[in-house]
Length: 223
Image 1 (cartoon, rainbow, N blue to C red):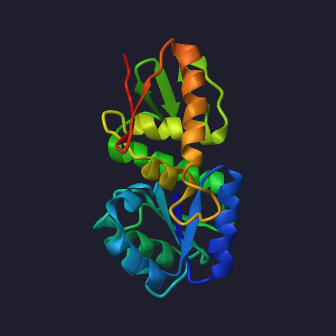
Image 2: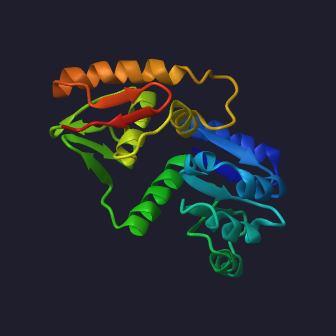
């Protein structure tokens, strides 16, 4: 999930729609409301955020420090002003990158992925046994061969791989894939997506690598 922070509702709604077209959930906040949310939100909600996108607002320069108290996710500022002083001030405030409008959501996602790679010193992929997922939107691979998936199933597999060794709940998966404020989709849709994903994985790898336990959630069980 991408969190967009801007004092203009037109901007937050616009970016949310643009990210949705790329299969990425996004939600928007006014800077004052965001500061309160990020300080009080549950850990699971914060962990669902893949990147923070900061736009215009009087409190914008204060927000990177607030975010860093809760999350290591990339913080990217979108600047309306092509001025060196503005860019330097944003970096001084603690953002990881600054982009200028107009900017395509794919570029923002690519920059966020690059920041995560630098922070974690990882390549643009993560392996779990024979399964390899990518951070740039490509389809995963199984045993070196492309494993094409619908975007929701791909996102779930990416989330499970990134959390391998940990058991994640249905709610955590839903928050990461659909966003914590999406009231138009029922949380139980996750079960349907996982059921389809498990059948496809079982056919490709020869066994079911997703272990599920009632009330506890899901984890990858790579043999």
